[in-house]
Amino acid sequence: MSVFKDIPNLHTHTKLCKHAAGVPEEYCAEAEKVSNILGFSDHCPFPDGRYGKERMEFSELKHYCQLIEQASEKYPGMQLLAGAEVEWCNDMGRNFYNEVLLGEFNLDYLVGSAHYSGFDLGNQEHFFYQQPSPDVTRDFVDVTLKLIESGIFTYVAHPDAFMVPYTEVTKEHESMFREIISAAIQYDVPLEINAGGVRTKRSYPNRVFWEIASEYPTLQTVVNADAHKPEQLYNEDHSTALNIALDLKLNICNLSVAQNIIKGKKK
Ligand SMILES: [Zn+2]
Ligand SMILES: [Zn+2]
Image (cartoon, rainbow, N blue to C red; front, side):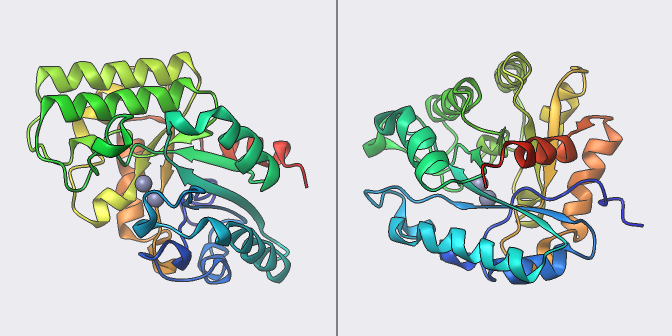
């Protein structure tokens, strides 16, 4: 029996985001071997097309939901959750998230991600391409804290991904890790151990981040594949991410998070 049986994946992309492969049905075919729950969280588009190179068009969002619906019909034994991985943008206001995405489009859940530094849209850096800079790092932490405190997001993805340009963890980094972890506990928001960083050999999951996290017994975590291809579900990289959580005895909450999403479904 797979160790992943009770750890449904809640971070799954589709080819609509322009840098992933496969449609929801293909991910279901892979996921059903292990779990009867699968959460989709493709990169969420914005009405003005910002960050458009790495996501579907806003006009495709309905189609994305329909593809998940169709997959659900084809895999009636599976509980599919239609979510989106989305950045916090001050100028969009809470309405966009609550009324448009969760309301109008009836998404089941939103994953908060700091892919870009800070809140100044004209002056943001992507976490893959940033140069080491204390200011940019701080900007990533501020966005991460905002995601946690907003009360909008079901969990926060790769909270340690801002460490990509660093090979060493400084005392300053450690205190930022503690800020993020403490906020996650205070606001009751799970933090994600992301297998995408294992797969791409970036410096996350950051071992020191999660060692510090293990000092906080009430922190909730989720372990996810961040699958950009169906075969990335429950593969070796996903297992590596899971082993970090098991090794450090972190609270793995994927199942209860999924069950809460299912309870809140309006359909
Ligand atoms: Zn992401
Ligand atoms: Zn992702």
